[in-house]
Length: 251
Image (tube, rainbow, N blue to C red):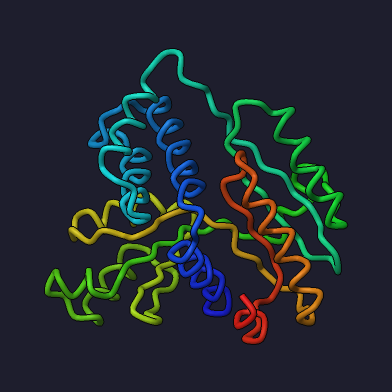
């Protein structure tokens, strides 16, 4: 799994440096909306809302914004967002998985198709790429958060492994914990019991194998991914392109 951790590291750094904070906040607000409509506005009894609030804190969203989002989601006139995924291939056989939250399916599929066409990508039928990815729980926890709880690294790692972590590693001051999709909720509960707050926790699509490209070809794929991520209805974009040191440096 460690090879794939590069993508988690890039996502974390990109999020921390991303100037388009309104886009990041918009994604979190949509997730809060869906969580409230699905399980109510009490985070104590709504794990999905609890997770959305934790992720909001991880991107430094002000508490007032979070509370407004929760209150607005409870309004009967609030937009209803649907979760929808699209699968595509980019140049050189790079597989791309696109996750969306939308209140207008026609608008979203039109936007996705238009972006793919402009960047020589092709939309595939649903399920065409599912065999290329595993869906895993990924938790990002600052090392200092664990230290503040008075826990040594070995003790912390032993606790999360006992709770079902498939892999746990510490790189550049952040723990990254991977779980099977079905163990995502139990890991959330374990971290809550330990009073350790993740900076980010989500289900990611981890590629089983990767496609290696040269720098020029990779930059074209990354440009397409950037444009997709800028689209309002798109929450996450995953791919199976290998992120070499040269490509990471160019990012």
